[in-house]
Structures are given as structure tokens and as C-alpha cells.
Amino acid sequence: MINILLLIVFGLAPSLVWLFYFLRKDVHPEDNRQVVKIFVYGSLAVFPAALIQLGIFDSLSFWESSLTKTVFILFLGVALSEEILKYWVVKDKILNGPHFDEPTDLPLYLIISSLGFAASENILVIIGPGIFNLSPAQTIAISLFRFVSATFLHALASGTLGIFLALSLYQPAKRIKLSLIGFVLAISLHGLYNFSIMIIEGNVRFLIPVLILINLALVLSLGFRKLKEMKSICEVK
Image (cartoon, rainbow, N blue to C red; front, side, top):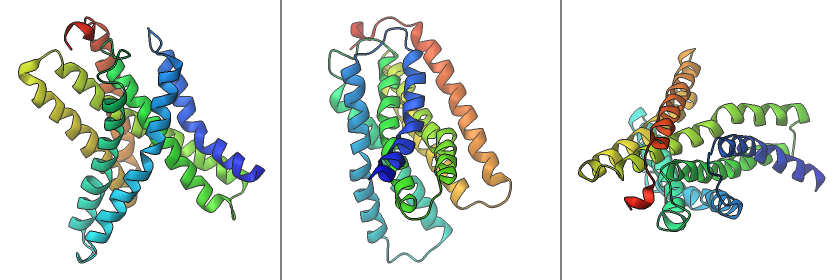
């Protein structure tokens, strides 16, 4: 039991560290209860995501293994389903409520939802082999690696989507265009990240994920800066 609890702690740690980092950047702190709620709902979104992905894998069993099939699964089966579900948590629980009252709330809550999602992923990744044969050093190494890789990717991809969705609220004529750009960016870069680490070989396998993370971090940083300069979303909702 103690061993399992430690594995869960190491699975949660990457998401919690990033959560505290992003919350400290928030000029107007969000209600802690809302933060916990969205984090928990985001973590639960892993299960419908898994069911959707298993359904897609099963329905495509007739399709012989190929690069095209792999790309389809990683981009539309995995990345699309995960980004939509992380977004749906925020849309359902925050978007039309009183806690959504300034431009940065949308990307921030999407980041919170994504970190909850990543926390469940991390726990499942660590607990699977961890119960049987992972040493403490190996468990820590996996936790640290996912801190700078998959967990960070989830936060950056969903946060970038949130930036474009928030910007779309201020430009009704471009609302659909900006929303589509946000979804396409989040899904395509999420899918490309997965594809590069799972399929591509050689040094490029690590270079592409690093470039994706750096560029998403820049977009998110610039996006937050732009949103902080805007008036309250209350006036445009």
C-alpha cells in the first residue's frame, strides 16, 4: 500500500509543480475550490479519452499497419480526443459561469484541466510497471522526464488553445477563424510531438519535441501578455 501511494505521489508531482507555477503567475488568483474542481475533472477526462481511443483502435483493426494509419491514430485518435475533452471540462464548468471574468481565465483554466489530465496519465504510466519492478531511482527519473515532456506539453497545448479562444471573444468577425487556429495548433503539435517520440528515429526524435515545447511556450507567454492588456471579458461575453 505504501509503495502504491508513493507511486501516486510521483505521478502527481509533475502536474502539481506546473500547477503552482502557473497559478503564481496569475495576477488575480482564482478561487481554490474552482482550481481543484477543474483539476479533478481534467484528471477524470482520461477515462473517456481512453474509451474513445480504444474504440478507434478497435474500429480500425481492419486497416493494415502503415504510416498513414499511425498518423491518423496519433493525430485524430489521440491528440484530437484529448484536446477536445480537456477543453470540454472548462466549457462545461467555467465558460458560462461567474468565475470566468477576465481574459487570462480561459487559457489558465485550460492549463489546469490539462494538468489534471496529465496527472492521471502520469500515475497510470508509473503505477503500471512500478508495482512490479521499478526502483525508486527509475520512478523518480520517469517523473522528472514527464515533468519536462508530456506534462509540459499538455499544459502548453491546451494553454495555447485557450489563448486563441480568448482572443476570439474580442473579434466576433474572426471568432471561428481564431478558434479553428487554436484547435489546429493544439491538436497538430500534440500529434506531432507524439509521432516524433514514438515513430521517428535518430536525433530528430528528440529535436522535434524540444522545438515544439519551446515554440508553444513562446506563443503562450506572448498570448498571456496580450490578454493581460485587454479589458475584462465580462464586457464582451
